[in-house]
Image 1 (cartoon, rainbow, N blue to C red):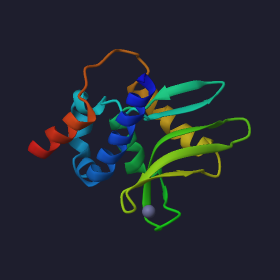
Image 2: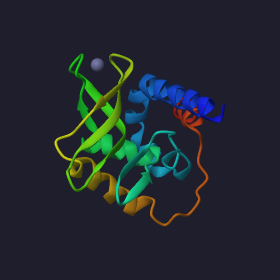
Image 3: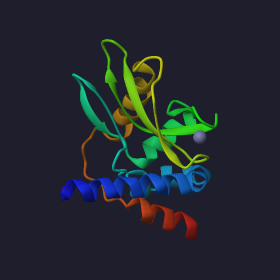
Image 4: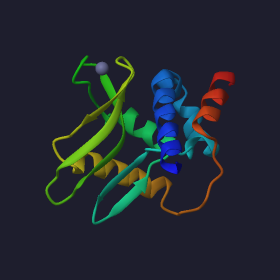
Length: 152
Ligand SMILES: [Zn+2]
């Protein structure tokens, strides 16, 4: 039961991200400026590798990774940009798998990069810069962030 609810929530969040990707990118500086927007938690926003573990990547970090191009890839179906939100892999072998969304196709896309380090290095650099202190920060939910930006 709990799992079903969680899954439902992440599907909704994925849809919300797909529907509002342009709004989020256009307002990225506002997100970077305001902690309550920056630290918005996305259900699937994380990166994991053995043996290091799993690191949560909040909305602000994801947008930074989209802006730098590190968390972008190409949709296998339409050729347009897909936005990566989570990844798992191995630093030893470099194998990896990411989960992304394609706003054009309006669907989830699973894919892989040439090497895990391409996803790991930029995410961990940002994680260390913004998230490592483990301080609990008050943040809005994704739907609240979107509302906020629409009314800003
Ligand atoms: Zn597509």
